[in-house]
Structure formats: C-alpha cells, structure tokens
Image (cartoon, rainbow, N blue to C red; front, side, top):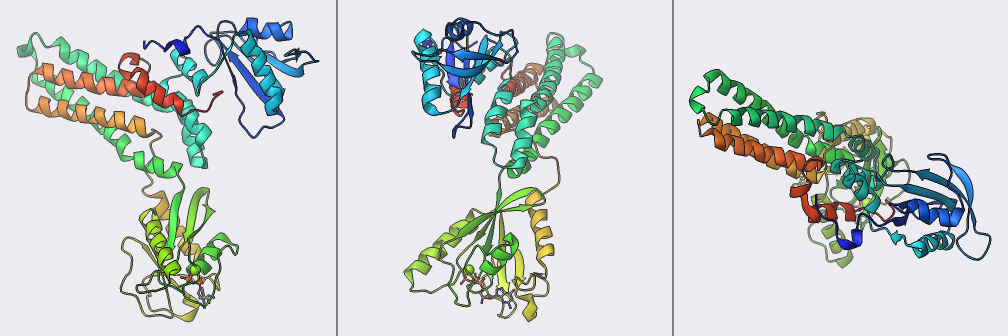
Amino acid sequence: MTRPRASQSPDSTIVGVATGTPDGGVAIVRVSGPEARTFVEALVDSLPPPRVLARRRVRDGEGAGDDALVAWMPGPNSFTGEDVVELHVHAGARNVGRVVAALQERGARAAGPGEFTRRAFEHGRLSLEQAEGIAALIAARTSAAIDQARRLVAGELGRTVESLRSAVGDLRAEIEANLDFPEDVADGDVSRWRAALLQQEATTRSWLGSFAAGQRARERARVVIAGPPNAGKSALFNALLGRSRAIVSPTPGTTRDYVEAELQLEGIELVVVDTAGLRQATDDSIEHEGIGRSREQIAGAEVVLWLEPADAEPSESVFPAALQVESKRDLGTRRPEWIGVSAQTGEGLMGLRAELLKVVRGDESAPWIGLARHRDRASEAAAALSSALALLERMAPLELVAFELGVAERQLAEITGRDALGPIGEDVLGRIFSQFCIGK
Ligand SMILES: Nc1nc2c(ncn2[C@@H]2O[C@H](COP(=O)(O)OP(=O)(O)OP(=O)(O)O)[C@@H](O)[C@H]2O)c(=O)[nH]1
Ligand SMILES: [Mg+2]
C-alpha cells in the first residue's frame, strides 16, 4: 500500500462540510477518524446510539450553541471505514464555520479535496472506479451522465472488469503451469488458449469501441446551425426551441455573435447553436469576426445543420458531413432530396428532430460507462492481449505469452485499484481525488 504523506496521516481525524454551496437550510459537518467520537462528544455531551439521528445541542463557544441532529457511525461499517460522526447543523457559512472551528480546536484537521472518499478507498469500502463514479455523479450535467455515474458507483464497471481480469489471470496461470514442459503442450491446449484470448481481446476492444458512445451520452452534443446569411437559421433555432430566443430579420447578417440554448429531445440534452451566416467578402469587421466564430462553432460541433433557403439557388459551399436542411419550404423547393423545414409553418420540424436524434444517438450499441482513465487502461490491456495472441500464433516461447497476459492483468487491475495499490501510486491517486470538492 502507498504510504500516505504525513499531512494525510491515516491516524488523523478530519473534519469537512459535506454539503455544498449555496447553503440550504441545513449543512452537514462530517468528522472521520479514530478521534471523531471524542472530539464530537466534547461538544454534544453524549452521542446517540449508532446510526440513529438524534437532536443534540452543539456547544461550540460561549453562547447557547446550535441545535443540531447528530449521527454516529462507528467504523468499519461507515462510509470511510473509520469512526464517523455527522452533525446536521443550521446552514450559513458563519454558523457552520463555528462548529468546524470548535472541532479543529479539539484537534480535528480540515479535510482536503476528496479526502473522505480517498479514505473510503484506502479502507477498501470503495474501489477506485467507484470513487471516480462519485466525482462523476457530483459533476454530472445530463441525465445520461447521472445514470452512468450511478452505475459506476454501484460497481457495475468494476464487476465486469474484475471478471475479465480473473479470466486473464486463470489463463496466465494455466500457461505458466506448462512453462517447464513445453513439449507436453497439446495442440488442443493451444487452440483452447487461442480461443480464450480471442474472446478476451474482443471483450476489451468492444469496451473501447463503445467508449465514445458513452462519452457522447454523458455530454450535451452541440448542434450548430450554419449556412449563408438570411437562410432562416435564427428562425429555425427559435422554432426548435419553441421560443423567440434569437433575432430574426430580413436583413442578411443579422446574427453577429453565436447564440446557444439547451434543448431536450426525448430526454437527450443538446446544446443548439445559432451562428452568423457565412459569406465570403464583407468589409464589416464585426460581421467578419462573427463569421470567424461561426467557423469555430462548426469545428467544435457534433452535428452541423447546414441550412439553405428554398428561395435561393444552391450555394457552392455546402458544408460536408452535415445534415443538409432546406429552409423556407413554404416557398417551394430547389433541393428536394434535402430535409425540408419551414420555421414559418412548422412543416418538417418533426422529421428534422427525428434525424437529429438519429445522429446524436449514433449507433445504438450499448455505451460503455468507463471514464477516460478506464479507457486508457483498457486500451493498454487490449494491446497486451493482442500481443499475447500474436505470440501464441507465432508459437513464440510461452514465457512471452504469459508475460503479456500479466501486463493485461495489471492494466485491468488498475481500473478498480483494488489489488493494485502498488503500481497505481500516489500521483494517480492524488490526481483522481484532487478533482473532488472538499467535504466529499
Ligand atoms: N417564408 C419563410 N420565411 C422565413 C422562414 N424562416 C425565416 N424566414 C425569413 O427569412 C428571413 C431571414 O431569417 P433569419 O432567421 O433571420 O435568417 P438567418 O439565417 O438567421 O440570417 P443571418 O442571421 O443574417 O445569417 C427573415 O425575414 C425571416 O422571417 C420560413 O420558414 N419561411
Ligand atoms: Mg440569424
């Protein structure tokens, strides 16, 4: 196990505010460590029985003290695995500050970012990817992100990864058992190993293949409406949102800066962006700047809606890889093969929404809930499994195959962090837990 730094001594008792800002009516002050009980008892006379919320007066100074609810959760069956006491006090920075200061006077140390969760990990209460799931849950901005983070916290990824890791480990053990007598290895063994390896490699690659879908689902896709001036981009933007958010006018070059707004389509959150119309020569420097910003928006888009109006000739600069939409269909059509809409009559909007959903959802393959760090480790594991497979097919010495399997095993173990504290190291843990807010 990595030795914590002196300032993070596992023996120290830490205090932090578990509730975030802005304050609600109640704030939770959490104390964890061997002296949690003693420190809090000094303020509240007696602790309630374990896991019972009881009312206590918190004497944190001269006056009457705060009227609080106190929960006492003795370790190891607590969130951190240590003795934990939670004080539900009245919120407000000053009031909470006094309670925290009183605990610090008794000897509790202010917790660093993610320190409670880190202790939970170090005491085996959570695996690493579950801890990362907690951070992802706190940071989640879309309902898909919340679902995925909850599944991480519930240990779903950890169980899948762990089951592959143990299969790789079993295979390595079996191959190693044959190292001393390679001439006894039967052809049947080799083809069985090969089949197992193929399957393990395919599993890992399938995670990598659906990583992007999971990431897309977590984030709000940016849908950028672009096209020549006066195409009806702002009118379509408003029609999609169902409210008049952007200025619509017959003057080409009306929209200068881009305008963005959130849009929900069947439970999928999108960001729709209206941009300044693209045209070549313009000596208006503001419009010029606006066009530059449109191009940046297009470059950063998951989906570009390229809009051209039915009452103008097709332009030469249709943006490639975009959904091609003809606007002002109430005026006729010159691009019958494009998706047709009219912001004025509402014609075609349903069809456009359906096309948008199709693109945003991408392939319907189940998205992987792993985060970027998990993808990186899985990708190393997949590479090692591929090498092992290639070595086996080349009839290379079995030591080499076993070595590659060992690499794959270690990479997979780093995802959950459970059995691989050594190789993970302080810097990785520091990076992961520093993303948390204080009190988590
Ligand atoms: N007939 C008809 N007119 C439309 C429709 N949509 C927009 N218009 C008109 O087309 C003109 C331009 O609309 P905007 O939405 O401002 O066009 P834009 O593409 O945002 O233009 P810029 O911001 O200048 O690039 C306005 O006069 C709108 O009323 C439509 O569906 N049918
Ligand atoms: Mg506009």
